Image (cartoon, rainbow, N blue to C red; front, side):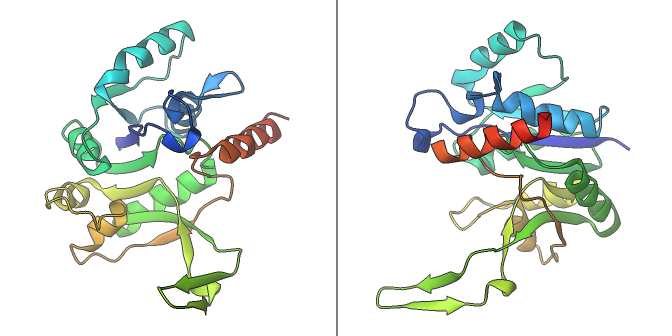
Length: 223
C-alpha cells in the first residue's frame, strides 16, 4: 500500500541568526534535510516522498544533492506563502492512500515512532505522535500566572499521518491564522485525533542550542 511523505522545508531559519535556511545546515557533514529524508526512506523505501521547498532555494538543493550524491528518491514541490499553502501544493502531487506530514528540521523520528503513527492511522484514520511534558508549566495572562497540571498536557510532534481523503478534505478549507498544525485542521471537520507515543529525540531544530542537541543525538546514534 503506497504511502506519501510530505516533508515541509520552507522555513528561513531566522532564529538561527544566519542566511542559510536551517534545513540546509549540516549535521555530521550533511544537511539536516538529508538526515530527515533518509529516515523515512529507511522506514519505507517504497514511499512517495515530496519535499516542499521555496522556489528560490530549489536550485541550491539540486546542487547539494548532486555534490553529495544523495540518492533518496523524492520530488520537489514549490512552497507557498504559508506552511498551509505549501502542503496544499504538495497534496496535488500525493498518490498514497496514507499521507504523513513531517517537519524537514525533525531528523530523528524513531523507526518505532513511525511504525506507531502509520499503524494507528491505518486502523483509526489518523495518528499524531506526542510526548509528555516534563517541566512544570504555568498559564499567564496580563495580570497573573496560574500553575497547570502537566499530566493533562502533551507536546505534539510530527509526522502526523492521515487517510488521504481526510487530509485532502481538511485542506480544502480556507486558510486562517488559527491553524497550528495538520491535526488541528482535521479536527475542525469533527474528527477525533488519535495520539501515539513519540520519542524524545524527535526534536525540531529551530535555534542554535537545538543544533547542539541534534549533534549529540546523532553522535549517540552513530556510536
